Length: 161
Image (cartoon, rainbow, N blue to C red; front, side, top):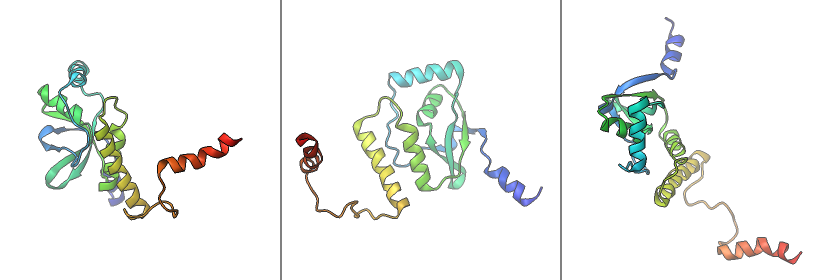
């Protein structure tokens, strides 16, 4: 097999099964995995149908994989006695893995405000890094104003008309 073909096969995504003990949680994962009613329903579904959506993971040193999407599915499978789970392995940078992890969780119904805030902060920090902005940079050159001043400047022309 030629080298280019081998390289494209290695980067090709496919579903495989990996032992649960080779999976690591995403560091700074802002979303809690709770044994609540939703977890019970997820366990029931997995028990009945199996894991329908594979976990998304990325390789990390020492033969382990970091979970990008699927912390709850992994937890439910573990509780049901699964030893392996289906995964899709993606080679992602640190920043791209943060964006994928945050975006894959924000659609959930029950997320606390603090979880959402931390997730959006992680995402915002990545987007700033990718755009080349420094953390201290401000998006506008005007002096800082209170929210009421900004709202009144926007609203007054409409109210007068």
